[in-house]
Length: 138
Image 1 (spheres, helix red, strand yellow):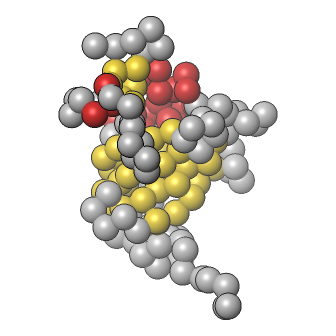
Image 2 (cartoon, rainbow, N blue to C red):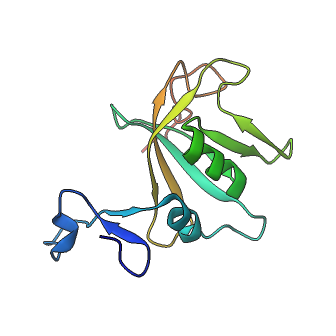
């Protein structure tokens, strides 16, 4: 059952009870409600973190606008916005290293997306499996 905010409790039912400490209620949103929950910045963009749906590895960060997010949700092929080229780009359209959307989440403030994806080939343009391969020495 959808509430007045367009939010449907998680099908497992645990969203209907108060969370225990450390638990998070997962809200399932319609595509329209999900898009409405996103707080795009002054340039109409929102950062999107791509994470491997199976391994949990963080793969990359890219930008999305409303159109790229809508296309991603409707097609299942992840589409981003290129700030440098000022155009949409489907991940892997030239390299073949595609991303299929498994799940999409918007954070509590609506200003960051988490895309759980099925990655084909390396995610990084350098050929690395992930764009996050440099860390600070401590």
